[in-house]
Length: 153
Image 1 (tube, rainbow, N blue to C red):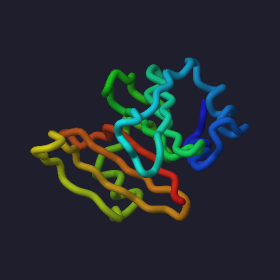
Image 2: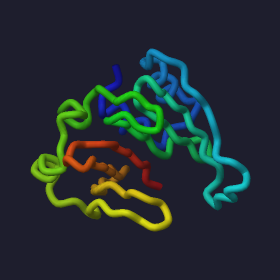
Image 3: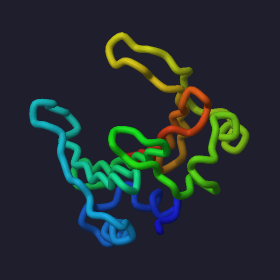
């Protein structure tokens, strides 16, 4: 089992380095690997995705380094729920209210809304730390839906 600090430590690490391979060895499944299409013309370069569907985790690499990790706390996009810990408690135990109680006021966030271009946007909040950002999305009942760790610089 990987701990929350293992995931934070992995951010920014090389795709083929020992930290990342050590992380993968603890998953009980092989990843589904894909890349963003060339047609996207992303100025930041392609993103290579390692999808651990049964574990509810997706790792995104840019320029060979771990850029972000998505944790699907509730079933979404074909992923099973992530059933391990986020910070100091089970992922499914978090609510929007207790996130604020534990972490304080978020650096950014918004209420749920419907966007004409992209559709439903869930309530979200973002906390900025020195080496990474933490973004959390919530379902309509206030329960944690998805968590993303994002590497800085």
